[in-house]
Amino acid sequence: TQLLEQSPQFLSIQEGENLTVYCNSSSVFSSLQWYRQEPGEGPVLLVTVVTGGEVKKLKRLTFQFGDARKDSSLHITAAQPGDTGLYLCAGINTNAGKSTFGDGTTLTVKP
Amino acid sequence: ETGVTQTPRHLVMGMTNKKSLKCEQHLGHNAMYWYKQSAKKPLELMFVYNFKEQTENNSVPSRFSPECPNSSHLFLHLHTLQPEDSALYLCASSRNLAGLPYNEQFFGPGTRLTVL
Image 1 (cartoon, chains in turn green, red):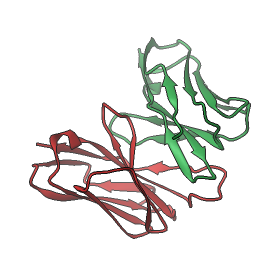
Image 2: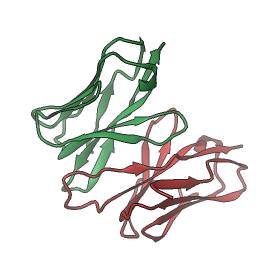
Image 3: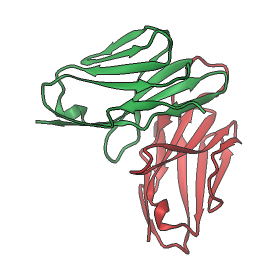
Image 4: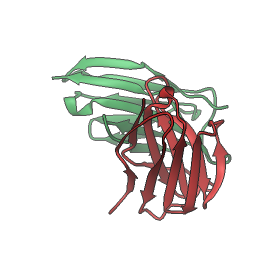
């Protein structure tokens, strides 16, 4: 069974601060995805990283896939209240046709 | 209508009731999923259908019965549920599971289920 551990589980910060959340596994994935879920809604895909060492930027969000494709990080610069939500990472194993979700990081950005 | 829709958005039921959750996707996908999301476990995969065939059942109790009549529709039939089954039930769809470099899942807004 492939497991994904996310840390921290909860994070509460002030508007304007920077933060990083992590997604770690002992398994290698074909690719890794990050989703954000707002209260009362389903998760929405933010990004997919495929290549080891890949870095993708989405406005103030920077995503990195580890060189060995076992881990990933999400860095948010100058967080805003609109960034509040549950951030989920999902590892994809193409050969097995499976995706594995982490337990999520709940982020609260206070104005 | 676009994306993945779920009805109802909220459902309250007694333990002896029978109800069904409906999911519909308008994305031309071939794979559909049911997830349970609760405070104890953020996202638990329940069932997977690929080309209308059930390919995964993650030890889900028989009081949950999925049905996939075609690639666009997925149902979850509920019968004699327990209070601990109260949760957000999410449906998702994606392209074919095999042979793709990644498997992006598109989620519906979920059905908030309360079992009394």
